[in-house]
Image (cartoon, rainbow, N blue to C red; front, top):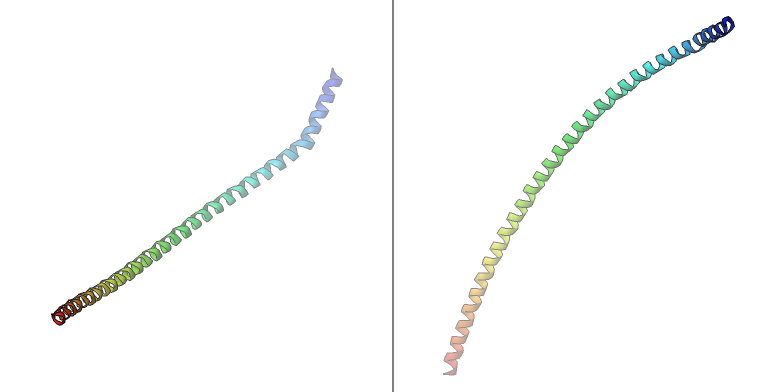
Length: 114
């Protein structure tokens, strides 16, 4: 029993002498890795904020560009509408004149036939 106890104590001492320092080293490395991970997490959060700000800025620029284009398109449509209205008025005048000329020709033809 004493022999088993001595063997047990020797194995226990060997494990504490060999494995315990390595475990402490591993714990230290794990702590360092945690620190690095937390640092990276902070960097990622910072980048996320920068990306969101950049996207928000771009969204504002795109909205402003669309608003400007919408104004230009409305102005262009308004100009085209005015041109069409003027063209329609001229066409109406010409048709009215053509009808007047036709009526006069018909009247002259009627007088010539009599």
